[in-house]
Amino acid sequence: MAERRQARARPRRTPGPRTDGGQSLQQLLLEHAVALPADRLKIRDLAEVVGVAPRMPIYVFGCLSGLLAAVAERGFEDLNERLEIAAETAPEGGRLKTLGLAYLTFGLERGETWKKIHAPRLWDVVGNDRHPDRDRVADGAWAKAWKSVHTENEKFKPFDFVSAERRRALKFLEDAARDDGIPESGDAAHAIACLVDGILWQTHFERVGVGEGMAGPTAYHEKLVDRTIAGWRR
Image (cartoon, rainbow, N blue to C red):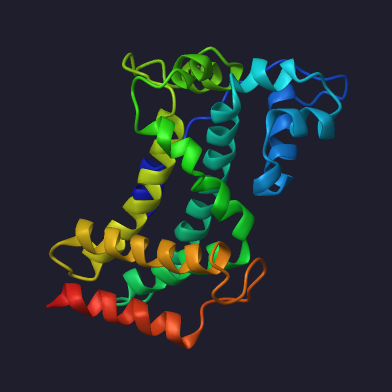
């Protein structure tokens, strides 16, 4: 387990330009962006909240897509911390269920975060190598800071940072499925992730169930997870 955690360790970003208070401008903008509701996560709204000119968030993130990517990366980092803790305490034979419910609990408790890491505009850009926002984000200070700690990767592309965090979350689930002895561990992990995201989509967008701040999964949610895992054990 310790070796697995060490393999997942992530290098730290280099600090950007600093404010008078000593906090980097990147950190200041990101902290406020994380706190904004998903429907207010816009360049102008962020600049107004922080008290800077609209060109400053553009300098840091390149454009709105870069801002969404940075916020999504932070959200996935928080999710992965939750999954890592769950992995350390998950019982033998029930690891995938434990991590699946941990993911669901995170999304129920932090609905705004979940909505941000699944912003359609962000993933439209991630999936399109020719999208013009890719060059804009690559020129931003945030993307340059990410690349500076991945100098060994000459094939760096914008949005690799948020894609890496999403893959990391799926890897936690895949490792859990493998530990449970499920042969097709990757497919089982993907199935659980899709199930959880479907539940959260209904909760936060279609208003089926309780939204932000929900205490945790219901017995019905747990039964759905059990049935999905049982299907992959056959």
